[in-house]
Length: 216
Ligand SMILES: [Zn+2]
Image (cartoon, rainbow, N blue to C red):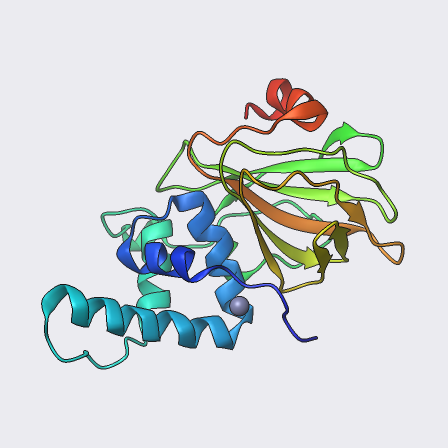
């Protein structure tokens, strides 16, 4: 399926510069895994950014930026060989992306009728606000806004809101201008990887639901 929703250039630049938080960086890394167009875009932006910063001719496109992002997500300094084995992850009913293989993923937990979540821990940033969300087919999620950026990558099923439809491989960035009410597609359950940036809080009923349970 063609990917219709991609991270913004600003987000890719921040990833290249290392200023994107570990949570959003994980969501973008999952997107990059499945999106050749964004991998190419990122390599191009990095080359241009490097040329501007150093006033030098563009360096050869870095094939390893994705690899370095993965390293960063796995925690610096480089982890010892014995710690580099994939984490044992619970059976969630989906194949997790490669970028998540060393994340600490919890089991599904009840969040509301037809609505589950699983905490995703990142070794490099224990404060990262990242989770998997699973909604049953046809579920209407509560309307909500955010104080900052919310990054969401669809892993299976589909979602739609006032701005469009999101299928596996799509990444949605919702900023503080977006108040949305996502609805899960009728055909199947939907699983997404979601991250909130920094101090981002969710407004409204969803925020009040999540905060005491999820902690953010
Ligand atoms: Zn993309």
